[in-house]
Length: 209
Length: 252
Image (cartoon, rainbow over all chains, first blue to last red; front, top):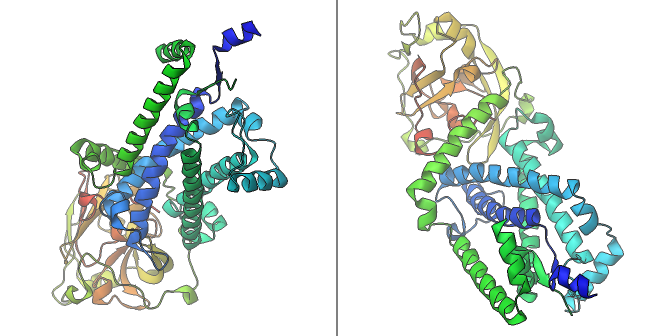
C-alpha cells in the first residue's frame, strides 16, 4: 500500500500526452474550420438563414476559404496522429469500448438528473464514450464530404457516394451541425464538472482518497 | 521531458498548492479560450504574418491540386433534361453592366509563346471543329448549375496556333476587364473548351459573348467570359479574383 502511494505520488494518470496535445490542436482546428465554414456557407446559403458575420472567420468569402483550406491540413494531420495513436496504443479499445445502447441511455438519463458519477476521471462513462465515438465518426464524415465538395471531379467516386456535389454540401452541413451540438454539450459538461479541464491539460488527477 | 519532471515534482507537493495550480490553469485556459472566441475580426487574424501564412498555404494547395489533377479524368456529363433553367448570371459586376462586344470588329488577339499570332475573326473561329458538353458549373460561392456549352476543344485551338504546349500557363484578358490564368495541363484537358455557344445558341452577352473558356474541372471564376486575348507564358499571371485571395488552381 505504502509503496503504491509512493509510486503514484497521490496522482493518477488520466489522459495520455498524445491525447491531450491532439485534443487542444483539434479544438483550435475545429474552431477555425467551423467559423470559416459558416462564412463560406453565407456566400450561398443552403437554407433560409445566414450566420451572423461577427461569429465567422475570414472577413469575406476569399478570406474564409483561405482559412478553411489552411486549417484543413492542421485538422487532417492532427486527426491522423490521434487515430493512429488511438488504434495503435489500444487507447480506443480500452477507453471507448465496450459500449451498448442500454448503458448509454442509463448514463444520459443519470446526467440529465445530475446524478452521473465522475469519481474516476480515467474511466469514460457510456454517455462520454458515445459522444467521443460520434465525434470521431462525424469528423471522418466531415472530411469525406469536404473532399467531395473540394474535388467533385477528381474524387467523383466519393462524390457520388455522397449524393453528388449538392448532396455532399448537405451532408457536410448536417455533420457540422451535429458536431457543433455535441461540442456544445461537451463544453457544458466541463462547466458542470470543472475539475475535468485541468486534467485535460496536465493529464493527471489527484487520487480520490 | 522537463515538463514531465516538473509535473511529477508538483504532484508531490501538498494538496492546497495543487488546488491553486489547478485554479490558475483553469483561469489561464478560460482566458485563452476567450481569446480564441475573439479570433474573428481581431488583430491576430488580420495581422500581416497571419496573411502571409494563409497565402503560403494557398500556394501549397495550388501544388497539391496540380499533383491531384488527373489529365484523363473527365468531369461527369449530364442529359440535356438536367440543364438548369434559367442558368444563373454571375460576374464581378451586376447584370445591367454586361459588356456588349461588337461581332464585326471583334478580333481575338494572341500573345506570348505562340508561333502564329495573327488575330482571329469570329467566322474563322466558328469554322473550327466544334464539340458540345453538358456539365456542372460549380461556383466558388458554393452553388452549382448544369449548362450546355459548345465550341472548339481548347487543345485543338492551341495546337492550331502553334502554342508552346510545354509552357506553364495560359492567360486570358477579357473585354470586361476581367483576367485570369490556368495551368497548361488543364488547358490541354479534353473537356476544356473555347465555347461560342450556350444551350445551342450563340453565346448571349450575359454568358460572355463572343466566347468564354469552359473548364468543367475548375470553379466558375476560372471560366473567363468575353475573352479578348490569349497569352501563353511561363510567367505567373494570377487573375482578378486570384489576386484578391481566391485560390489560383481552384480545381474541381
